[in-house]
Every structure is written in structure tokens, then in C-alpha cells.
Image (cartoon, rainbow, N blue to C red):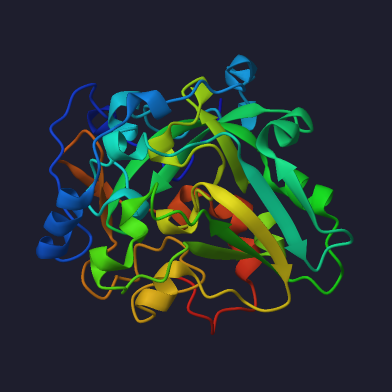
Length: 322
């Protein structure tokens, strides 16, 4: 018999196939309205074919085949997203179709043996893809389950050949205000620190759970979910899982992430899930499963403590949970 994971839930909490999702903005309502008026209509002519489509589906990794609840329907996961480059509401899917995913390169630099730039399709040829079903917990206290396809972040770290002095990875997303109007200074009065940046320790990046995502639901990952390459860190709040990566820098300095720069009192570097440590403006004790109005208990490390708790031994004086 399979051991019961700390995330296992009763059947009544499983995400239903259909749901009504309430729109909300992470920023002030007026800002969200301004964003909506500035987003361009989708240009179907820009929706190019993804040359990696033939790589999917990939084999399911049996170690990560059970997330303790049903996979959230694709229609929900691809249409309820935070992607501020394309607007502050959740329904950015249409606007995100403007994201051009070819050509796409990822620069790897900093404290590595040889800095280089990889094309996304060359990178995909150099790794073995697999599927993992992971839980996702947003800092806003909602959650979902996604069948991600990709490869361990550890494999990319090994390719990079970091120097012994490298202790952190700094991730950066694209910067293109013409393509992504949310990056235009006029939209938010120049108040957001673009481009989006996130960071991990090398120890976190090489943990078995850390995953580079290039696909979902048996196809290349949707633009609204961070195409063509993002990461997923299931034990951390969702804002740590940066989308649409164009640069990875190995460094000996802790990166200041996007949300940390914007509001350090609310969003820290570590951002591990902990139901006992509230956000300054709301509780983290429970979460709303997308597709259901019922709230369920949140679990420390989002239920993945057996894989990651050891990473934080001796760091108890750090702000590990927000």
C-alpha cells in the first residue's frame, strides 16, 4: 500500500471539471482597470507553430505521479494565471498569445566555467523529458495541480558547470514592452522593477523536486503559463516559479527578486509554504482549490517536506516563510 502523503484530501475536495472563477487584481482595482484598457487584441498571425510539439507527451515519473488530488482541468489552469507582463487580472490568456516563443534563447553566465547561450530547441535535444504531477500553491491562498513536462533543474545546473564560488542562481525573464505592455512604464507609473527576477540557492536548484518546465497537459507549455521555459518549485509559493526565462546567472550574491524589490515586507527570498505564518494581509492556513469554493488546510512545504525540509536546517533565523 502506498504511504499516505501529508497532502492527501477527501474526495469532496477534488477539483470539479467546471467552475466559475472570480476575477481579481493583485494590485489596486484602478491599476487593474488601467492594465485591461492597454492590453492589445490577440494577433492570431503571431501564434506560430511550436517546433517542439513532437516531443510530447513524455513518460510519467512514478515518484511524482500522485499529487493527492485530481489534476486541475487544463481550461482552468491555462486561463487563470498571474503574468503581470500581460496584465494584472487573472484572465491574461488572450493577451499572452502575443508572446513570441521562437526564436528563444537562454543565456547562462556569471560564475560558470564557460558562459554561453542556448537555443530552446537545442536545450530540449540535450535533456530527457518526463512528466511530473505537482501541486502549486499561490501566495494568494489558492492552489491547483498541473501535469508538467520538463526535466530536473539539476540537469541544467550540471550543464552550466558552475564554479565552486557560485552559491545562488538568478533567473530573469524577457524584457519587451512592445510585446508585453504590462512592462511599459506608463502602465504602472514606472513602479514595477522589470524584468521579472527570481533566485534560488544552488542547493535548492539541485534538489530533486526543482523542475524546469517546457510542457504541460501533454503539449508545449501554454503561453499564459510561461512558455517556452519556466521553473516549478512545488514547495514554495508560486511567485518563485519564474516564467519565460531568458537568462540564468550563477552568482555568490543573493538575488533580490521582483516582488522583494517591490514590497520586501510582504515577499521574501525564501517563500516556502507554511500555514502557520500568515501573509501580512491574509492567513495562509487554508487555500482555495481552483474549481471549488471550499477551502482546505494548507500543509507546510505544500506537503513536500520530506524532500526539502533538510535544506533549511540551521537557517531558522532566516525569514523562510513569506
